[in-house]
Length: 139
Image 1 (tube, rainbow, N blue to C red):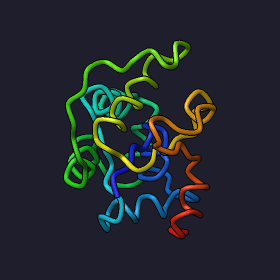
Image 2: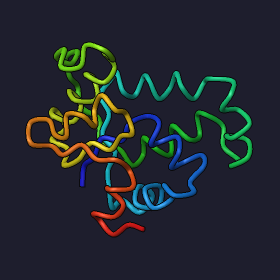
Image 3: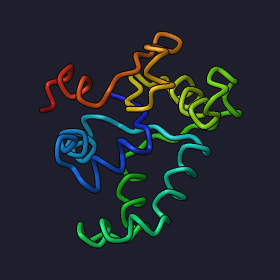
Image 4: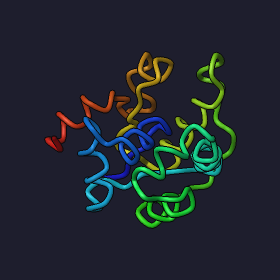
């Protein structure tokens, strides 16, 4: 199942796991396939370069490039134009929407209130991580 995982969901699932560990395990088992476009992949790359994540990366025994390689090997990449301005308050959220539509994702998983307020985009449900985990019985 193709899904778009917001950057914060990916970081929580892969670096801290805890309640999002089922998402991490589902990606590793190819039960879900994260989708990215140039913009969302670039955001993940930039975020992994932040100094505040170095300690957590070290705690899980990964360098940023190792984590990117792991995620990329299990992901679907699509090319999109810059997203329509559906969410003017947070332009990067528009890239998430464009990615989901282009990749024909079945879900968008996010904790971002701008996205969650939409509830769906072109028929693609937008869910909180815990709701996604419950819905798919991943947990």
